[in-house]
Every structure is written in structure tokens, then in C-alpha cells.
Image 1 (cartoon, rainbow, N blue to C red):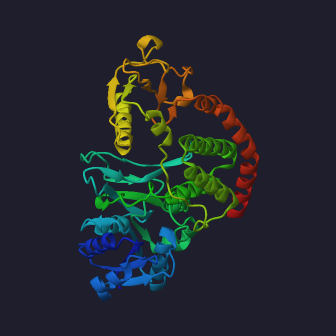
Image 2 (tube, rainbow, N blue to C red; image 1 turned 45 degrees about the horizontal axis):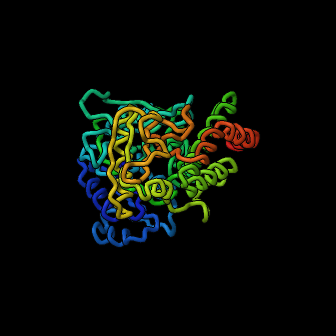
Image 3 (cartoon, rainbow, N blue to C red; image 1 turned 45 degrees about the vertical axis):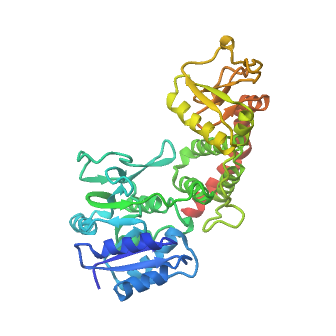
Length: 446
């Protein structure tokens, strides 16, 4: 038996996990065994792993999908029972450098005050750029941030970074620390589980480090944010629940305000865009978080993501020419022009799209009642940062903001003008309940 058990959690990524296992087997550090936990995959992952690697790895096949946290915990519990000194958790869409685990092990052996150590994570699709190098909790904003995210690797980053947590896509943890703080919070299913694990490690008096000489590539291309609201649900529910559990008592009200404002903004925006499925999922996530309904989402709370373009399609119908005023937002104008062209092609229409500088005036000849010389009406689109913060409300041009929201009708004006009042009503209706349940969670948790 080796000193380390590498635990790889897999769900329906047969090709990714094969490459991940192979990269771990090629590690320079050899005092290690490998366990793969398959979360009831339906793509033939388990049989493929058996055929490819045989007895060289320990394979666990769960009868149901237990999520990332539950999958890892299957391997972690086995490691604790067998007496391994360290557990190395790895996502299935990771390629590990040959020295990745050895560098983590050497650092941990020389720094007994460190409870867990993560790798420096690079984008698999853009390997010169850092995906994250440690995770910090931003208490004033009730969120977390991946340190050095998006930074070009130029050799200037620290060799070791200490933080609140590290991503479980590659983290080496002492078995003794896991016995003290517990395994990953399985009730999360996925998302925020590694952040909470790292935070628990810090609370127990151990440091959490990220080691620059331990390098991995991590693919983010397999997430399905554009397919269903699955990741949206877990991200929101577990995010809210984390801060309900760990926010100091004196900041409860501020925390509740921050989340209620954020939830309102998301659902109001999604309803304005016609993306009702997203709005419903966020509300389910919020309700489940405050009432403690954790684990795998119940049926009826995850929906397909449907991007609605009916509004823009209606505005473009019958128009052979579209003028877009950049209004100082050239990049946004270019992006919207591409959206207009895609819709025109889909409709089989030939629409001339032109982008001009500045902002239209009523005398510019593009008011909603103006006729072109060929008898066809023409209307302009004007870029703005946020339609909900507009001063110009007389509809002599249609406005489009950075979120893709279009203000083009009296109904749109009503929604824009009443947004702030609606937010106050939403917060008023929810705040008392939220605060009372935060207190209950804190009492139960402590």
C-alpha cells in the first residue's frame, strides 16, 4: 500500500477520465495507489476503465449519482479505512503533470501546519493561462474568488499561495485532518463543497496552500450551463447555504439584503428576457437553501435553458436595413450586430446592418414614424450600458444593453420604471423569513 491514494471521481466522461488516469499513472511519484469512483455513469465508463486498466486501479461503481462530493467521499472513506496517510482528489477532466503529486507531497511533508494543498490549475484549452491558484472567500461581498484567474503565466506569481480553500480538481489532504474536519460536505452534491472543506480546514487551525510547482490542466468545456439549469440550481443553493452557516451574527441582515438583491436581479432579468426556466430554478434554489433541502435536486426543479429571441425577431420582421448606434460601446454594438445577422439568416431575410458612432437625435431621421424613400419604415437600435438606468424614455430609438435586454415598447418602459420598487417589495416580503431561518441554521449547525 502506498502513502497516497489518488481518488478520481467520474460521471459520464469516459474519454476524459481515461486520459486523467493515464496521466496519474505516469507520475514520477510512485508511492501511490489509484482509486476511481464512477457515479453510475451511463456512457460505459466503468466497463471501459476495467478493460483499459484492470487490476492496476481500484474501481468503485456507485449505484446512483452521488454528485462530486458523494463520489469523492466514497473513495475517501475507503482510504481512511485502509490507513492511507494522504488522499489526492482529482476531477476526471484533469491532466496531471508528472511532478504534480510529488510536489504536493514534498511540501506537505515539510509543512505540518498545512492541512491540504492544491495544484496550480491551468486551462486545458488555453494552457498558458491560469484557471485558479487558490480560492478566497470575499466576506464583504458574500462570494468567493479564484485567485489569479485568467492570468497569463509569466513566472511572476508566488511559488506558494495561502488561501481559504482550493479546488477539489487537484488537492492533497492529510487523512488525519479529514478525520478531524470530516469529508467533503456530501449534502452539497456539487459546487461549494471544496470551498466549505477548505474553510473547515482553516477553522480547525490548519493552513490551506496552493503549490505553484504542482501543475495540472483542467477542462471547463464540459459544463452544461447553456443546456439546462442544473449547474445554476446547485451554484445558487449551496452558495446561499454556505453564507447562512458561516456569516457572523452581526452581519446576518447585511448578508440577507445582499442575497435578496442578487436573487431579485437575476429573476427580474430572466423574466424580462423571457427565460422563465432560469428564474424558476433560482427561486427553487433559494427556497431549498433557506429550508435546508439539500442533496440531489428534486424532480421538477431543473429545466432546459431556452434562449428566447421572439422579441428581436418581431422587431426585425420586414426590415431590410438596420442601423445600430454604438453610443461609445463599439464592442457591444458589434456583438449585437452579429446577433441581428444570425436572426436574419435564420428567417431567410436579407438585412443590411450598419454601425455608426454616437447617439441618434430625433432630427436624425430615424424616429419610429419616419419612412424611407422606398416606403419601408426604419428604426434604429442604440447601445446603452443598462436599460434599467436610462434617462431617455420616449422610445425614439430602441435601446439594447450589455445583457442583451431590449427596451422597445410601453410594456418595456413599465418594467424598467418599476424595477426598483419591485425590488423593495421583494426584499420586504422575504427578509423576515430569511433572517429567521438563518438563525435556525446557525443553531442547528453549531
